[in-house]
Length: 273
Image (cartoon, rainbow, N blue to C red; front, side, top):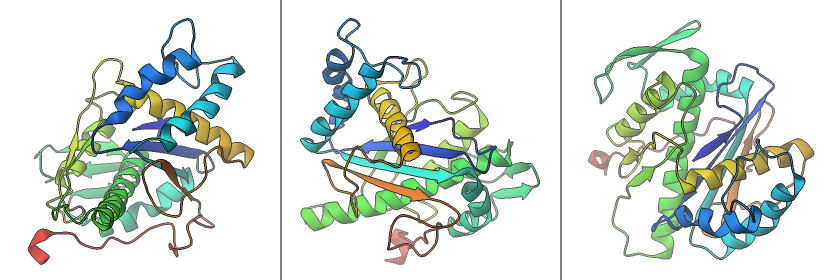
């Protein structure tokens, strides 16, 4: 998982894009070795999308990545959202995710208390807002992909665990955003938000090949959003070999099945089944 730009909605009009590549076998972790020599013949490794001044690198990524994704068993997932939408949604999402007792918003600061890890701390409200928005999105994607997998293969059991490998949040792996993300993800099962567990695996140094690919994909989608274009076909629901991209704004959501930019959860708590 990676983001473009940094996921802090300080400006209500700035768009934030997060992408997630998901698969049963984590095959996307090998894509860096495939794409690197194609995009960077000299270094043979992936570069940061924002750090490249040459247009060739970006052109080649736009040409090569869709081919690799199309011939894979990987779910491509993306979210683009305005900063104002993120901030306006925070109270509703706290309620939907049953976090009313755990996140106490007071102006510019939010106190985090009583979640699974037992750690209590304070985080700026703008940082908390995107962390919760992103976690809400991931839980919904978990539900959609789990439903798709069950439809395509009835052998799947009643739960599915995800191991999420995010790039470093602003503030680093021990910062408040990374801490809140990990705590809420680890609490998702007990809160009834997913059928299974969300486990966060953070790489402390340079990330991994999976997040390097996601960095480029997030940058590409950010540029597509600015230019009103779409390099990859937009899917109506997640499936392997393609990209499911939601675009949220205060005025509309680009998915016809959502009446508002805040999608409601259906509880997946196993004790209710």
